[in-house]
Image (cartoon, rainbow, N blue to C red; front, top):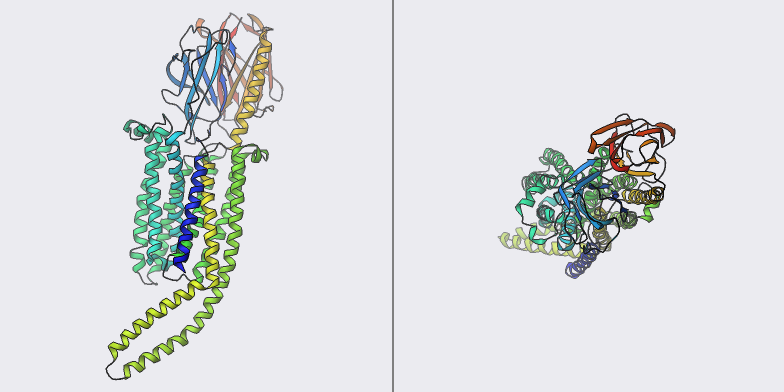
Length: 634
């Protein structure tokens, strides 16, 4: 029976892996988890005077390299000077050469978001009047090409290895301790360790090229590798390798000294292995939580331990499911119904933890019901929820087969003593017939072999066991696809970030139109995105000067959330500096008019020039930031 089923299993696994590979390849480059929410000059705008610097604002903190921000003239020549720098909050800038001629300029950026994913893009602005440009930015994608595909494959294999390693070991230690001496089970857990270790090394080598040039030739660049080791993602990968060394020791004890102990001697060792294994498994899970989604955004201090619990629940459930599949199909030693029942209870607890942590993660990453259908992250999350529901439904069927299998084994165990008495009687009669002990021993061994083969045939043809095999195999198939969807989900921009970026861009576009309209009447409007770093610290501040001339001016300050609604904050301050003449800063404290609106009258501008307008925004007692822009006044 096993020989006829095994090819089917292999075919199904190959088809599922092919489907997952297709899913990973069609996912394209890794979606940016930090989104561009604003720029100065803005996209597509025509400015009268060339700017001194170009600044970009993102939805979260990003990491810069020497070539992260570039400004190219119409012929494609770089006109930026010096290294990119942090302006304040989540705004970053780069100086440009003075006296740029009229024409269309292209700004390209390639940075790494705080959750370790590369972000790239480009836009244009014009000085004086638009012109033709020879700059092509179609190839400026992050995380794409062969390196991007290999990195995505490495992520998938690292998740798979973690699940098999942790879930397989937990299944042996907590559900089926006899499995420590079963070769297929040993090969499964060791294979999970090897897969996770190999995938981690691959990701470490690919990391520099993945977030940089994207060239295969840069994979073995030692300078890039040294830079990677200094990043948060590199530190997470190195810590994962160190924890895998501890996991190797755990495996050697589990399948070595532990298997050789007697049942009574195993108790203390079981407790020690359980504690040590839990610590190592939690550390491995934390190596993802500390460098990805959970470490960025609101409530990071809560999100990271929740993410660790989520990963451990997934591994215990799906990894234990894989181990059960191996025990049912590949193991010669029959697995007891008690072991299957214990795993069913463990799986139920894992599903409860998975649902609880998943609900929190969904709220944190989406932020609104509309993001379920209006963002790619939400759509993928709906697919994942559907797969989990399907998996739970199949697991319910497996529990039914488990109960029926237990009843069958109880009936078989009741008949076993009678068979043993008959066998003992036959053995005794063989010995009594003068000197036939050797022959009796040989016949006993043959009889034992025949009994074992008969039991195996009976076990394989048992409809309850066969039904359990099929339902567990179906669970494993759905789990493989679920893992692929989860891998793509971790590379997709969270719905909350995507919606905030859309709102910020819409507000920026609206204010840009307002600024263009007011420019004709002599007024100046400045828009600046800010992030004070608190749990609710992101927004856009708009400063209006009317008529923007030497002498008295009316100043209005508007503070909005990323979605365009008025932001009720405790304090706003403004300072004006004319750096060319070393005038200022001139402090201005506007009066609160309404929610999100401040105003100051008769603001005196003593001299015409390129004034730096710095706005300090305080969103709580301890969270504040200062953002700035230059404006030609007078």
